[in-house]
Image 1 (tube, rainbow, N blue to C red):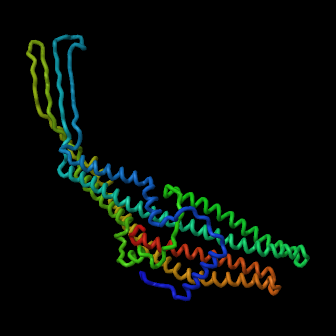
Image 2 (cartoon, one colour; image 1 turned 30 degrees about the vertical axis):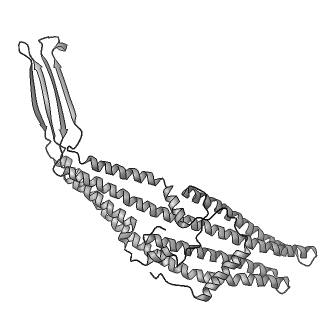
Image 3 (cartoon, helix red, strand yellow; image 1 turned 90 degrees about the vertical axis):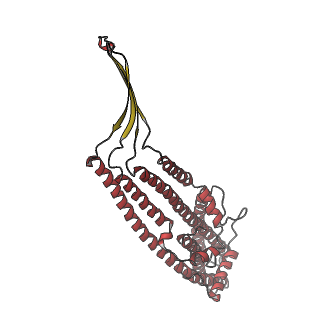
Length: 421
């Protein structure tokens, strides 16, 4: 991707001219306090993300399982206690037997190491999921900020248009009272004013809802600012100056780690071909009629026999999970490559669109002012002046959308290249 493209000077002036016209024509939005940079908003939203605790718990749990897998035995010990007495049967021949045993399960060959590797892979998977969640939060913040700023620009454009329509309406109303204009002209202006006011009310509702969403993400009242983001943004230059492959994308890394986890679980299933054997020690204390009491100590071993009935389902389930993980990794790589191509194409498109939109906004706003002046001089019909004013409104709206889309496209490109602003 080319990171050093610049707008021709005349086009830059056209874009700046449209910006100045918009700024001067619309009342400035009330801002309280200092603005928040994109970096601060993403950092605050990530710190406020509930997924943090969940991923931390998963990683901590996997690390604990890894340490637990280093145990000498495959599980906790079990106690077996038995007592026999002939008195409950009604025949008291003084037969007594008491016995107890303590046994522990043993690891099958390679099973303990395989269990430890599964836990280590799970811990690494939690870390890769953290990077994916961070990336998703950055995208969510960028999109929300873009939506908010576009709504605020839309509000400013609607306000400036409404001011112009009210200015025209004052002249028309005065002319109607003086019988210099017909009532249909006043109705035409009133209709346009009503549409503009309705549009303004809708946009204000969008601003309130989007601002609330952004404040919820960051955890505090936020006033976003993206004015420093353009093709010369240092983060963009840094990100686009390095080669990119899909393997660097957190989603691909997470999918690859999922394959590793599934592979380790398949290896564990291969070493778990039968239930764990148990070894233990036992003590028997018994006595019979006419015989002295006797105590015996011994060793016990319980060895299950391997069978396909239990081992084959476990192994095939693990192999199926591994196959699914491999397929999902391949699909994720394709998705990431396609998304990168789409992001770069969108950036190129918005770079071109903002130039044309700026030129159109500059021309239509100037034409609207000229048509209004011509109408006041009696040289142009009112309907033409109104149409020119609404054309200016539409072109300014298109310019605002192109500019915000361009800034968000730069941010999305940076994130896709593996950088969190």
